[in-house]
Figure (cartoon, rainbow, N blue to C red):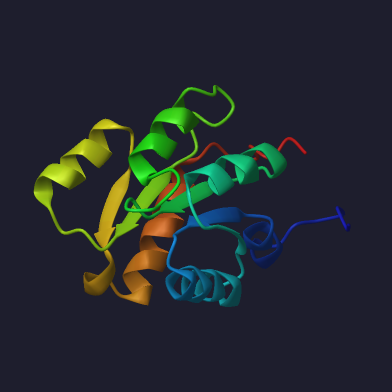
Length: 143
């Protein structure tokens, strides 16, 4: 790995985004969009796989579906926030559920944003990703 200098493209490439969705086509499409835009996506099909990914990787942002078998998104959020090393990782919900009560429950569990799958554009998703990554402290990568 080269460490002599870091230009903005290399900095984005180091950014790992965990995509958690039980719908394989949605997960693959989101990961592909992230990859094309220079991010390093890590995929998980449910909350249990996502927790395993957090243990293995240094994740900078989570894109989270809520309705999943095994472990749903809200349960995952609760488990994630219990660990101090993951507690500050921003989470954006990408859900097919356009229910205000559900969105409020997600926000109460520490979600930074909520996008309804059928209603957001790629540009909006990337804008939210950049916005929440910019809020993280600079040079948080300790590895």
